[in-house]
Length: 371
Image (cartoon, rainbow, N blue to C red; front, top):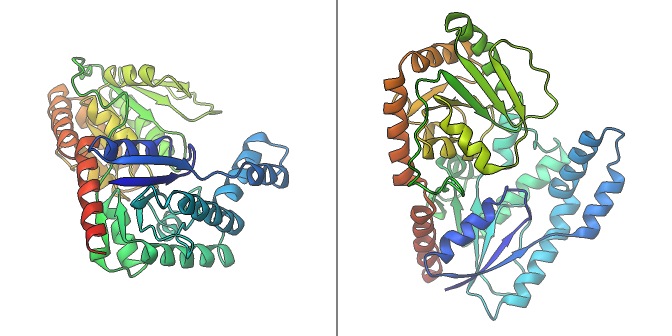
């Protein structure tokens, strides 16, 4: 089977390449094409100017990826790419719903890979929430059409699948959860290293602050540190923070993925009490390093973390509950190790690209054969 792989560049942190590689490793040929419009991005950069560089970049990216114009321009570009490759490919395999490549100009069926929806984003009030009114109505309408134009919709989580079925009223038989895998360098599951469960050190890795629940974690850790004075919290990811809390080590952004992986092994537990999480690669990374994880009861986190088995899930913003579970883990290296090993096994069974790639290819073949 030959697939035309369509995806944006970098917006999914390389996740799109992992999906394409996963089906390649199952013996499928994938021609990967990025749907990018440099001229439109330049226009967005100019029209989104703000004296603060960070806000300028955010405004530009929102317009370039989530505006009505972006959807229309990229849909035309994607359809043209499909038209040029229709004789060499059996189907389109698209990661994300930022455009619709279907067209009267080509006959290629569409396999759509989705990790989240606009209506879920609105419910979570995420940083990528689209503007209400015209913009929101437009995107929901386009997603509705895209889900129905696709031969099959594949989701990374049951959370996304439920939204497509319940919020968009798509036939459940038309939506299949295939999951997502842990990416390099964390996909080396034969690493002989083990975490330091006796360290009483907690690790947070995430790019956001409120969205990733770092405010909740800092509040909880204050309680923990008062009762366990030799405990510590390491923060990796957010930039521009001023953290003066006792026992907190703020490392900022680290681009060396091997260096971050080393940090996982230096800690006893991983915590990210996020308020918005389509999948949560960092949880898979922590599980690959045999760390117990704490997340929240929102989105895909309860799917990844088996509560009281591989870690804990708390109510979003519940710092008291988080402090309780942190004290349990830091007071018992044996519990940390037990949960870490259970999480590692769960990862092997469900969240490797070999397992996910097999599900994807079987689903694609079945859906195309039924057309």
